[in-house]
Length: 137
Image 1 (cartoon, one colour):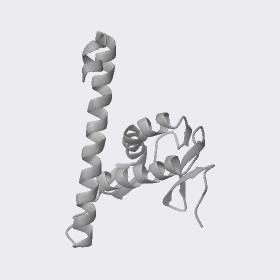
Image 2: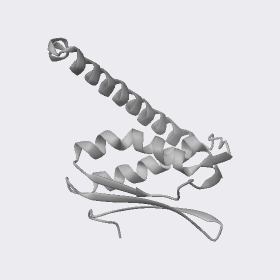
Image 3: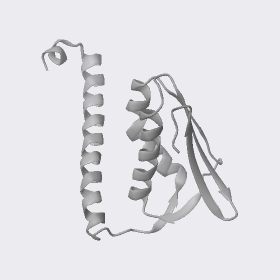
Image 4: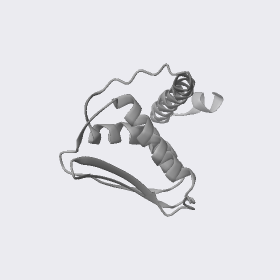
């Protein structure tokens, strides 16, 4: 806090934005843990609505962008220009996409590359996250 008080106004604003963003992210992580508890007890309600996956990806990327930047990753996304509509729970879909991207960043060396692709095939929406990390078997 002492270094925050000694920062100029622009630095204070930037630090305040980072704190607010990270507080939101931490709140989201706690909510995720509570959701896991609810899932294991069969208490999760899914709110199915038409959702544009482009919006889901944008919200998920907002959550994980600080981690991507901290690791010096280059992150590319390839999506149809108008996105892709699915019937699903937007909050849960954001959690899924954020977790996939988080894993790509965590298990890829600093300075690595990740790619998120969104496509429609045979009436289905396909989302894939790939990276140049250690991979899974």
